[in-house]
Image (cartoon, rainbow, N blue to C red):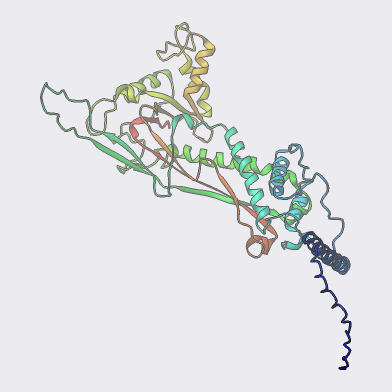
Length: 445
């Protein structure tokens, strides 16, 4: 019998199941973690920055200037601070308070230290002590010059321009010698027959050339005046400058008629303005009603340049120039009129502008030009209406008022050598008679 070999079954343990894959973190959790990390780093940086700032502040404390913090509501500010300083300066010069929101300046010393940082009055610009933006070494001088300019222009306009009605004013684009041209020679227009050809007319010109005069100087604002807060002196400067310009221009105009031993400026023909031999516009009779009437007649007989035609009413006198000594007599002459015939002091006047005495006097004063700078008490001049026949040209360059500007430098010039901030004033003008036919003068010996 065959014996069966027993078989044994070895129990094989089931293999371990595959480990499950680890779950990836959610996207929002990763972003939050990154933000936390960055925030922590920033906090650490801020802490380090604060520590460094405190260390630097402690090191600078020993040399810091204290008590200089800008007061609330003061002229110190951000971008508009210089504008506020300029406004406060203009108010200080005018002697008024600045607009609301701008603190008044206490004086020149505050202005100087504010714009220079020079608390020791050494004349040296201290950049590190200046709080305002865009301030340079020339800022104060520029602000003062601008403020004075505005005041001088306003002051100059208030002075009486006694010459204004009689002159022809013009602005020129350069300092080339200004030329004043009088056209003449045309005479009357010729008649043109029907269908006929026009004929060419002859015309000539007379040119009078002037030369620009440059007048000016400077005012010195010293360290001493600044330190003493001498505001009144600076406040008086605009009026003084305006008065000087008015006097300078006025005397130049008056001299047109008194130069060359009272015969006046030289004309392009080589003769003086008043020349009895060549211009027939000079006499020697004292002022009176009779001499006035006779001189009016002589002027109306003046003839046109080259054509020889009488100018008549074009050169009839309108203005009467006199020294202060003859002002009353001149007004009396031009104010006389109908209604006072036979009076001991008045006579018939065909130029009387009104029946009312007050109105006649007012109109007469408009025609009398009293020259404050004429010293001869007897000479007098008649002038044609400048709107009909111009007789005196007045040319300007760089404006009709004096200019003021600064030339200060802390490293050169007067600020460096004399502790003086110079403020320069300058005035360009030219004066010239344009035609002798507009004038008649009596040189009374």
